[in-house]
Image (cartoon, rainbow, N blue to C red):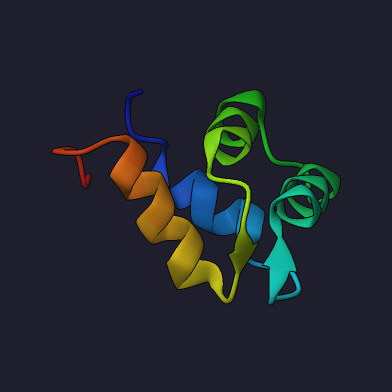
Length: 69
C-alpha cells in the first residue's frame, strides 16, 4: 500500500475524539469529510483501539514503509 497524503490524513483525524476503536475512527473521519483515499488507508488499519492521532499516523506509516513524505 502506498503512503497516504499526510496532510489530508491529519486533517481528516483532527476532530476525532480519542481514544476510539477502529470503526469509530473511520466513521468520525468520514463524517469530517475525509476523501476515499484517506478512508481507504484508515479502513486498512488494524482493528484495535487508538489512543491518539499519533497512534493512527504511526499505524498508517507501518502500512506504507519507506515513504514518510
